[in-house]
Image 1: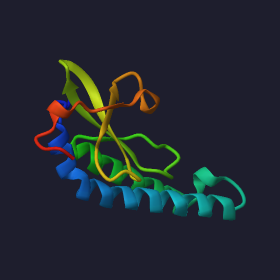
Image 2: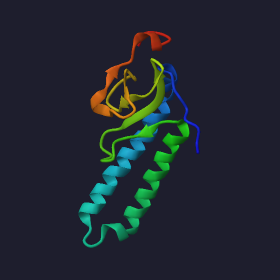
Image 3: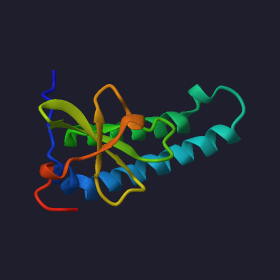
Length: 128
C-alpha cells in the first residue's frame, strides 16, 4: 500500500504549475472523448479512439497520484484536486479548483467539496 503524502498549503501551492498542466491535458482529453462519443454510432465502449483517450486520461490521473494528489471531477470539465493534509491534528484534504488562483480551502476527508472551509492562516508560511 502506498504511503500517503501530506502537504502543507505551501507545498501544495508549489505543485500547482505542474498540476495545472496535467489538468489541462485531462480536461482537453475529456472534451475530445465527449465529442467522439457524440459522433459515433454503436458501442462507445468498443471504439478504439475512445479507449485510447481513456488510457491517456488514466495516465494523467496516475501522474497526479505520483505527485500525491487526487483528481475529483469525473465529468472532466472543471479540474478539482485534493491534496492530503493535516489541520488541527486531523486528516483533511486541501481542495483546489482549476478556476482558483491559489489553494485556500480544505475539507474533512469525508465531507467533499460542499464542506470546504478556509485554511487557517497559521498553516501558511506567508499570507496568500
